[in-house]
Image (cartoon, rainbow, N blue to C red):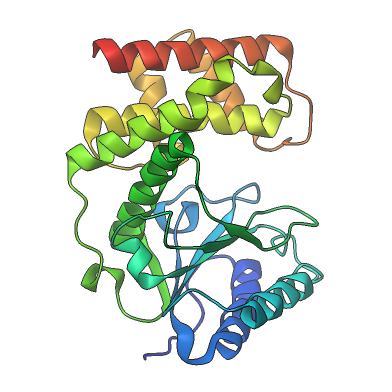
Length: 274
């Protein structure tokens, strides 16, 4: 397996955290380690201090309890580093074959979310309703990883991830829209923090972009596309959503929540009539 110099991003602080994460994960996993990749805004563009450091570590097989415990301790250590991005890691540990297809009955993924105090979690989706949304997210992840992923270690993902057709991308975007965004209409109280409200608006922009273009864009690129495409009143909502990323812990204002719900309805109407 090839090894690369770890200077994959223009951000020294991010690279410093990755210089801890990669060798420690490789040492813990041993022969189970297949590769490590960056995706998300670090790969597609638009990264800033409010962005996730999205990564995925591929393994040869599902990991035993001893590996889980060691990875948990590793992430607890990384969270103590004196760096603004030490708590920005958002990543998966998953068997390589899981990226060829999605089968929640057979594959147990490990995931750590960004944020202080977050811990590694075992993720397996048994609910058939949620399963479709997870399938959609997994298709989109595969496409981003193949077309835009940054390789830190291992083979180029294009060598083992087949191209994702435009129609499959559209189906995946629709699945995520219907699986986890549409239910917010019945539970608007879940949209409380400004960071979450902003994330929903920007995800809707990406969904609309994918449904129309059959491709994937970064949050920033999709937001600018949607502003040019949709005009008012969505232009102002999108602009406020981008600014809201920089104050994620603030409470979302009721007018912003209502506008977000209206944008969800607009997107669903666009999907069903477009």
